[in-house]
Length: 97
Image (tube, rainbow, N blue to C red; front, side, top):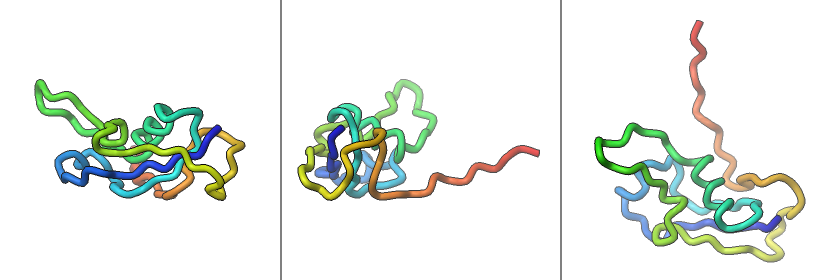
């Protein structure tokens, strides 16, 4: 596995409205595509798109977010694919009684 740094380069609010986090992230992933998918899976807010509008994630857009491999980043390259930083808590979901 490799360690990747994902960081925004286009901060336009419209591009980030579907993300609950808008900063840098560090992930352990097999490749850049998987690194971007980890960002989407962790930070993307599922919303109902307007009719005819495709849902997009800024974490998968190379014009909005850059993805760089990090060498000697201080993170263990061994282990499962995962977001290493930031560690955000997922929103609580109420259980139906």
